Amino acid sequence: MSATTTTGQSKPPLGFRVRRWIGDNALRFYAAIAFFYLLLPVAYTFAFSFNNAGRTNLVWNSFTWDNWLNPCGAPQVCPSVVNSIIVALIVTVASTILGTLIAFSLVRYRFRGRASTNLLIFLPMATPEVVLGSSLLALFLNIFVPLGFGTVVIAHIMFCISFVVVTVKARLASLDPRLEQAAMDLYATEREAFRRITLPLVAPGIAAAGLLAFSLSFDDFIITNFNSGQFTTFPKFVYVSATRGIPAQANVIASAMFFIALAIVLISQLTGRRRRVV
Amino acid sequence: MSVAAAIGDTLNEEHKPEDHQRRGKFVPYLLMAPGMLWLAIFFVVPIASLFLTSLQTPVAGGQVGEFEQTFHFANYIDTLTDSTYYIPLIRSFVYSGVATVLALVIGYPLAYAIAFKSGKNRNLLLVMVIAPFFVSFILRTIAWRQILADEGPVVGVLRAIGLVSPTGGVYPSAAAVVLGLTYNFLPFMTLPIYASLERVDPRLIEASGDLYAHPFTGFRKVTFPLSMPGVVAGTLLTFIPAAGDYVNAALLGRPSNTMIGNRIEYTFLSVNDYPTAAVLSFILMACILAMVLVYVRRVGTEDLV
Image (cartoon, rainbow over all chains, first blue to last red; front, side, top):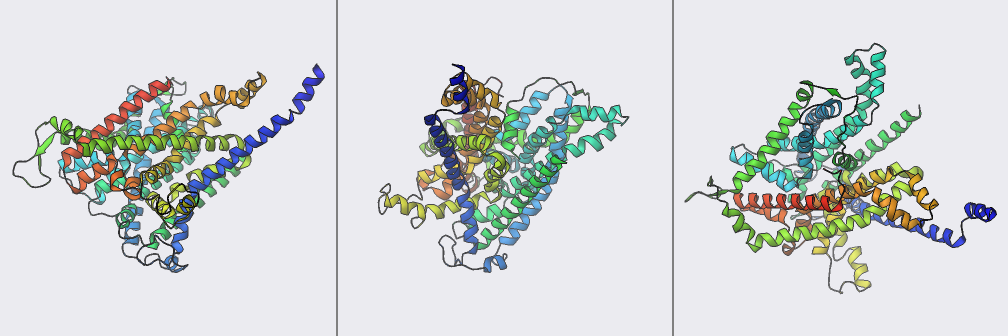
């Protein structure tokens, strides 16, 4: 009795192992297909940045380096990218500061109105972008604010704040509060403990939130389209030129952004791992 | 890294006071005042403004785009009974509903594979899930146009195996729109599910095996229920933006595939009929809120919202 149990434990029946192997690898196969689905359009975007496209970049013509050597060759591409970068930088700084402050007050303090604060943070993320965009446009129209750069920045900061709050909050909540207490037991003042213990530990969360805000702002189309007037950002430029034909230079810019972002994420992953080891 | 996971956490936040939290009188309010004011002025006030706009009527003898505040509630009835508006509204929910189910079917096994079968490559695979976000989503949607075009690879295969008639195509069509929606929001489905699967204690799954549960039974009775918060967060994060999206319908669909977002954009920005567009936005928001509430009740995770 006991002997059969031990052999049963060390070596499960063959049929079970076969089924388990199929199960495991079916899952891997399925995941591979899912990744293929996720990354195929990225590959297309990259491949078509090398297309010797005429007016439209929808059909493959022939290989060329020209688009990469001359990324500003098509009209309007570079000005719209510059606009997007300026907006995204302002939005990143503003929303990261505003959102981080909210995250600190939510995690560190008990106060009246916490639940409604949480709700107000959550609602913009649960509202479709058309509603956010059209409601802001309704406000700007009702009080006669001219649309343009300023209204785009205002709108982007609004929807980025919530994402910054949840990102920083997650990091703050995972911190061990005893670290700060230990610092204060060692005669650090509250301010010193914050500056030398808490802030460095939260910094990766704040950095992640900033990167997120940058990419959300840079890639936003729907809200921008409602509130930009004549001001053109990169996604808006791409969308508007979709009917006439998108220049291959847009694919060059998008591919370059992809590799820059990928590099930032991979480097932060690698340095993060090293820090954990030391 | 996984924002969607963090949003899931916000949804599931337990309101237990923690001992390291300080009781503040003014400090917390001071800290959050600037950000919350921003949200109040540029989120709450606009929603109120949108509501007021939805009750306006054209100025008699005025120009296009000139409206006055008349609290004309009949705007809602006029819009809701107009088939050019309610049909795209229903279509939006059908498309986004199908896209949400598809994203769950694709995203759950993907999240499961990353959480339990990825070993050392876990972080790399997570980066691969969010990597599409690094390319402008409009360009990715346009890439689907190329992939699904009549001379592209997909249609060739579908024609060869007879799923599509020799002269038929995939783009533009309702299927292409749903595929685009599924594609665009798949990471929002995958990440929260991954986050809750990652937290499942593997000993619980082992325990179910020790108690002679078939692996599938163990999954059904232990793993899946424990991943429910992620499933709920993921479906909401997919369904809500998909229902309001108009980029996919505009780039991958025919005029007969327009969704409510396309209608809102067109009515607001091209026709300049602000009251009707505001009514549509409000109805969309109300429908989504109602569906979310029913869904969250039905799914029965009482620690939600």
